[in-house]
Amino acid sequence: MSKKLYYKNPYIQTFSARVIKQEQDYVVLSETAFYPTGGGQPHDTGTLNGIPVVDVEIIDGEIRHFLAEPLQVNTEKVEGSIDWDRRFDHMQQHAGQHILSAAFESLFGFQTISFHLGKESATIDLDTSIVTEEQLNEAEKLANQIILENWPIDTKWVTLEELKQYKLRKATTLTEDIRLVIIPDFDYNACGGTHPEKTGQVRLVKILRTEKQKSHIRVEFICGERVLAHLHRKQQVLLNLINTLNAPEEKLPDAAKTLLDNGKAFEKQINELKDTLIHHEAKELLSKAETSIITATFHNRTIQALQKLARTVVTSSPETTCLFVSENEHKLQIVAAKGNLVEQNMKELVANVLPYLNGKGGGNEKMAQGGGDNIISSEQLIEKALFYIR
Image (cartoon, rainbow, N blue to C red; front, side):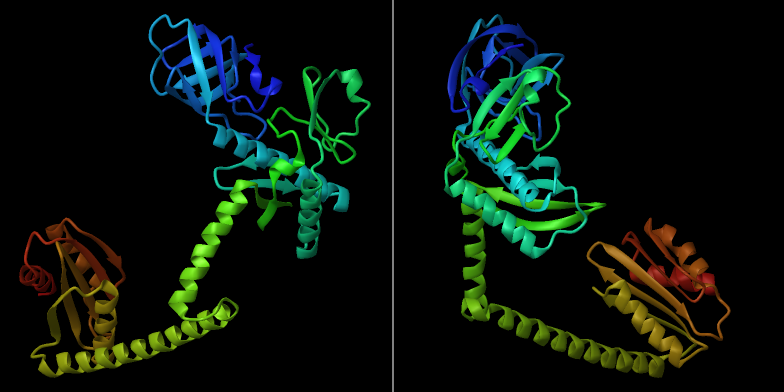
């Protein structure tokens, strides 16, 4: 396998290497500073001879660098450049995970059973079904104390026999090429990821939230520069809320509650007015009706509004049938409803007229609805429906 420069020096940002294998979409190098995906940590990105490296994976014992476009044919040497911001971010998050996981275990005996490093945040799954707010605060406080005290983060390659000398936080299944990441007297862990030299470079750990995952608790957190970015976003949201609600920061919850309460009151009032309007509209339709079949065309009415109006009409007049059509942009929608004294099946009626619209719909015997393309006029659609009633 290629020489792993990211283990020799995780701070390396540029390097030179020989091409030992060149395929259409990837290359294998004699040595590389590009970290491949593994152990919960995503791969590095950067360039080889100026061509973007979009993925790095270990496949069949090779560290394969997948490129946005192929290198020139028969390229013998490459100059590599690591996206340092991404690499150092991963180093901060991964080391922060070690520290936070060790804090949960040392304080409460909660073991970390999995780790995921995402683009915006990272998560650990704790082998427990309950974590209290106080425990979260204590673990976060201890983790940040370890960071503040700037403890060393050492790495060491050991044999299976030498491994017995160390009390690992999590047992490893490796039997050879065992790499330990050690924060002396605090955390010993078999790990293949990249980490800074001191805990202080993690800068800060902040727990964001937790969620139940079957019998485990998932803890979402951020470290380092991500904390500053997160704080900046929260501050912008906070300032916008202060300006929008015209209230100081400490009064924002009360201002938001008042706004929501007022909104609910207004919504209730609007719904009551709509109901009143629908009853007046239904009454007017019935007063103008010359037969027991009431037809009407509307513009930009929703199916729900037509249903409510039709239901109001047939409830007031059980011998009545309603055929309501709404023209909405390039669509036609139809609602058919009947009173209790009418025998016609509304679902069958609508099913018979929808093919004229290339439409779809549904409903039941008493009320059905549907819609489709306005390839015929609303008047023609009503005529089709009347034909099936007659």
